[in-house]
Length: 505
View: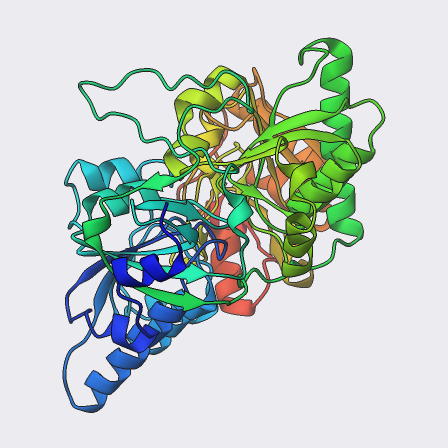
């Protein structure tokens, strides 16, 4: 391994602006990271400024973008504000990008996170010209130690013509050993992925690339841009308690093995509340996780001994928590592994391990279909992410949601979801602050009764009961003329309350 002066001779060290100058209108770029964790920051911001300069001269400048998942504001936000996006996939959560894509200024296509890397290798989408990677260590032989997120890094590094490296010294080189970089063979040569428990390691601790592809290196010391989630409240705490109660009862009845099963959990304040409740419930043993994102609550439970191991794609934690991890790497070294998204989200592994999956719904209908992505059927919120990767292959699939939104003006449970991301065939359990709807082994009519009685807010119960009577005797009590009545009532008045079915009888 060469020393620092040798590294200066091996690679071209440049400013972010100099690196961005290699990028031209129409180029396609893949970015490292998963959520803001592990995403490059300096070069994307410089590319956005380059786009603004071109636009000021009346010239076109837009790039195609592949990411692991959502990113930080210095990437998605900067490029959206610069009107520099030719296309974007697979998931986003930036408010400025959301505005742009809903205004048809940033073409966006939603994808399951587990399939993006392989579909790029299959040639289904344009090949990236550049891969922009954040690392905490780099050798002359082309060994990269990634930082706090992996995402699609192995595939974009393989496919790209050129690699631009952001060497972020804010992340310690001692992260070497936390990653498990593995890329499956493509069909017809693919073999089983040999992960049989969350802690199994099957790949390399570093991402190995052809060093001749490394175009330049930009030094930085920027923090990850993971924002804090909203604090839990009485509603989210009750949802968490209901999830813990349900799983404790499943243990008691023997439907979950006594040693418990690995947990997959989504992102956000509800997910944090759920994790806290699982950790606090004395009837639930210490458990492992096989998931996408490792959040603050997971780290706290790990310190308490309630979580034994966590496999994920990123450390999506706030900066104070990340610094606490870096200050005690020896404690966490045998408790955390970070993988590429096509491994962390792989359906084969989810089904083999018997994951208990817990994700958040935007909207649920009375038959168990879930909308994870769209507001009123047309406005994209964030994207499907990895929820379907896990849900369809879960041991038990759970969706949580507060029963209402907008101060009660919206019922999160409706006759028919305005957009379907997860079908009733994949969803086992719905949980709100009011209770638990166990949909396993139930007909559509029975599912409707279960959801209405146990999960719906009191002010909407009778409305939804009345809706199920509109179609008379049938298998699935759905009325095509009335099924979006609550949505249209909200569009007209700003509230779903007051929806009447009289005109549809």
